[in-house]
Length: 473
Image (cartoon, rainbow, N blue to C red; front, side, top):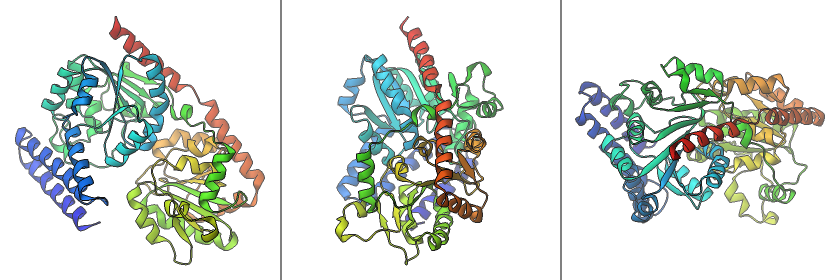
């Protein structure tokens, strides 16, 4: 961690103590929101771009957090019915895409307002939906959100998978102004940390933010992806009548199609031909780099032509990934490699994906897919459906709590392998590399699991139709 990062952590810890020792009234809240604003400025000053770009970016970000919108956007929103969609990461926004397209066709008179929590995702969403209005998820301050909802008509709020940074104050203000909230493809809780916000917000003092939102009873419709997730929020006191178990919408959106021409371009970027065996490790957390590189080092002894593609879960970890690679291997960033002419570029051993949103495309050229976030207990698994959509054999680790039913189904249907340690991971990759028939069998089965479980998106749209029709009458 940098000195700046350590200083921020120390300040955060200090303010936690202050918040715990003082009443939960306005002084502690003002202290917290002032701290958040300082953190936004600090982050901007140390981004790897020009100072002017940093300043412009941070001013925009702070304004959006406080719902100080540009005049042009205010004009667009004024007097219009609004559907507000909030999502945290790239995966969630890929989930939102088909829903958003359908809503635009069904409700052309509504304005779509999209919000997300950080700069990387903000820029990704702007690129992905250039015609939409994109802002940062606002601070959960009563006066700020009440002022916004008194001026603009938000008919529907859609939160993707978790409430994210949407808080109790935001939801109470929405409800008091006649809006309806929906949790789409719901998970019980994702937040692994307890931050300062959890100590000084309006309700649920000392709990995780997500727990406080569920306990508040402010969410009107909770469309949960599976029964086990519903059971978790029932224990928090959520009204059962608000809960609907619809299945995982990711099964509906994961079916992918990529042309031979597009695949050919990916091979050109990688500087290899279509006969090269490719091992792709997706959503790799920083603590998992050593596992993946050790496995590759062992496999390379038997399969010298094997190419490893690593997709870090967070782009900030790209440099760390590069530093972990043994110097005997030729390792390149993807952006570095694609700018090299093939005639002047050596064939890489390892390629690190270093731009947002490209993992799903590179799964199409993988021989075997390893889904990370599953080899250490901290992260509790990642989605298996993107490699399944390309009929790829899948391997994941023992820690899949966030995708337990999906993992169990894929293993049962022989669409994936679950391994328990590095030795078993090496052995499983070797089995698959040695047998094309086994790869084809598991890839086909993975694709069939995906196809059999489609339908939740249609049911979700049905609920939204019901909500918005009632608001028109």
